[in-house]
Image (cartoon, rainbow, N blue to C red; front, side, top):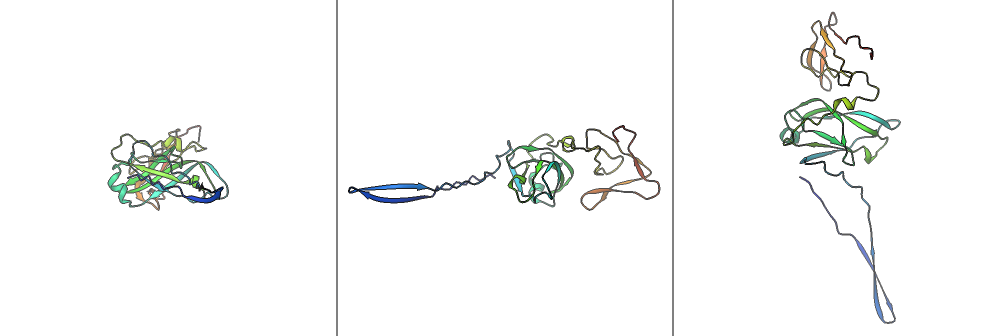
Amino acid sequence: MRFNQQKQMPAFYAYFNYNGILYTIVFFLIIIIPAHAAWYSNWVYRKKIILPGACGENLTGFPLCAVISNNSDLTVKASNNGYDILFTDYQGNKLDHEIEYYSNGTLVSWVKMPIYYTGSDYRNDIYMYYDSSQTGNQQNAVNVWTSGYTAVWHFKETNGNIYDSTSNNILGTNFGNVFLGENGAGALCARLDGTDDYFHCGNSNVL
């Protein structure tokens, strides 16, 4: 549900008498308030996410890990696979993102920030949209990992091999008996036996 709250402009009045005629001067107080981001397309629901500032210096093309746990709105109003979820910046521009994990209102997603500013800065605010009536997959994982990333493996698979999120598509082939789908600190992970388990990532010239 969207709310568009408007307030009446405050005014101040001054009166003076000149040659027996009463004059009134009206002064309007104009207050400039930063606008909320324009609503994205036909999505019905959104949440504003206020981020802390980057450390040290502004970061360009920064993949931000956004973690939302057990959110009842996502559970009820987003699709089961999370494909309807998207993110915009403070001006309403759609941001590239990749979902690492989504289930029952818990989301682990990587959102590419064009510029991640230091300090408390409203330009760091992002909006998450969700609406199960929308079709299509809103992710653009390849564009998240363009700033110097040769390969990115999240270990989000539950069996078999691991897949690269970058445009290099470097496959990690499961040798031995690596267990995937294990519960990690933030999302899924792999468990190796320490003896003969490993992933072979080929002989690509980009490695």
